[in-house]
Image (tube, rainbow, N blue to C red; front, top):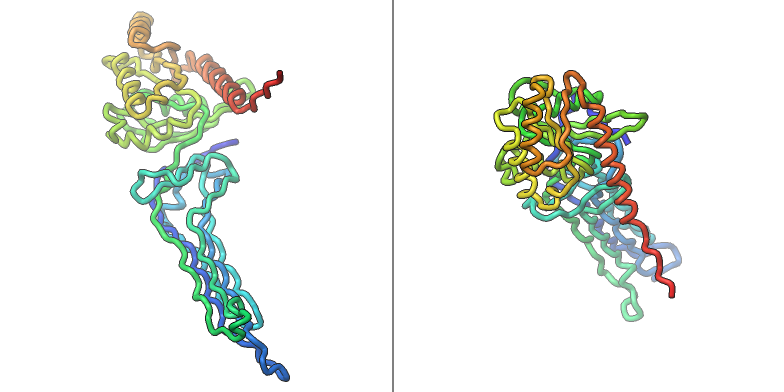
Length: 353
């Protein structure tokens, strides 16, 4: 599956929308009127069912930009029943087409209503109201000419939050200006904004990396800062994108004043946001190696290992040094993760005496 960002399409990972399902149509009050049939009896049909609001996970989308300009979605109400026992047509459903990785939350943004992770998945968010019964439905042995009918039942309405968490094989982590966007542009066809100042990247980006006749999806997460787990620097939204990545590539700026401390800060933010996230497979890479000498790189690597980093590599996105080796490490971790996932999803072998 390819995730490609159009150059002019702005990435949007959160939106609040109003949804309303259709009301049920009223039943009909009618009696059969034909020549030579003096007591035709009731023949009022039922009202149509109101349309529902349905969320559907579709392929080919990777942003919620469509829900920035349209925020109200109302399904059609059912039409009234008619004489001759004719039921009213049901209202049309409204289908919200959403990218894989979208979570739907309540108005207070604290309860997950649905989590769309697979293409084709459909969730009814607001069920349409039932149509009212016509008077023909109330005919009984003791009441041959009922004048009772139902007006139909109301639909549902609510505000919901749409929150997109990118589904990528690997995610780029690091402090602002650590070289994440430069790395993404060097290894894929993505064209993120690159500049020599912090917070150049304000929106997550995706790129498809080709390596050894294989492909995997790499996500560029905007730079995190201390306090990100509490929302500093939009940290909550940025950290959410990391949750679905199989492996993390933690870039540490080799030209920074204290690279090991920067690594420790990001690791602490991951753990504070979600302890399980801190256990995710991670490769630490010292970036901008072309601007450092060998002795300096050795000192940084020693300090990172002492701080707790395990797999430490050195690379330069500008010169290409160490880039291919790093990508191969990422691909190996992705394959291992997929294999573990397949084993975990296999049905257990039934026990035989």
